[in-house]
Image (cartoon, rainbow, N blue to C red; front, side, top):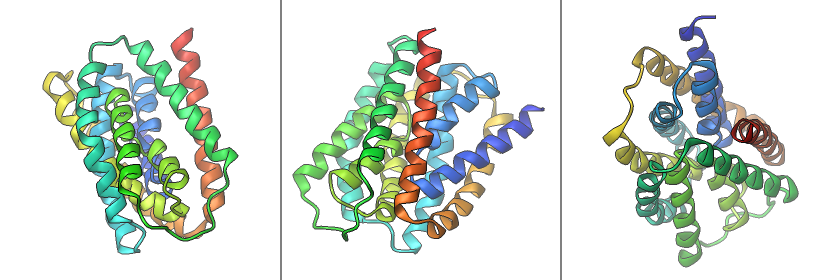
Length: 248
């Protein structure tokens, strides 16, 4: 199968994940770029941030149009997370790839287990507590910059478990956080980035953007608890695969 076809298929899956689940895009993009398309870890990380930034911005627009974005919460998360994301991205550039991969897998697995353990909240959105939101956002930004991912796989559990958003509101709001944090991390990583194969990155991004529109429709058709379980299972599978690869 040609690299172009693989890029289109992988991009569509990433877009569906971001549009439907509000995260998981970069969790899927990085392995796809490395194991299917032959990118180095450094190039895959930078390319995934480009892909996820474009796709999450598209998905954010569709969720905002449906009223599923809690702007105050998202902006607090993003504002608090941007400086840690930039600092952590600079630090991550000095660490071995297998260390980052193992850390990524561990964090993704913990987030998935938390979501499997705790059912999606049935109550409506409650007032934002600025200090709590800012603290969670700062931690999320640091992990985003350190691991080189958009952070939606952590943003959704944080918005659900820490701030009590319903699943659909958490999905929409996480896309705002992903977009800002990814842009912040990307500004650091592009400074010394490995040259990218745009013949692969461009179609991957285009397919992901189109997939995000279908993902939004999928999220409207599936109940919140079901979305949460799907999200958690995907995270566990990816975490197990990447941890195995890091330690062998």
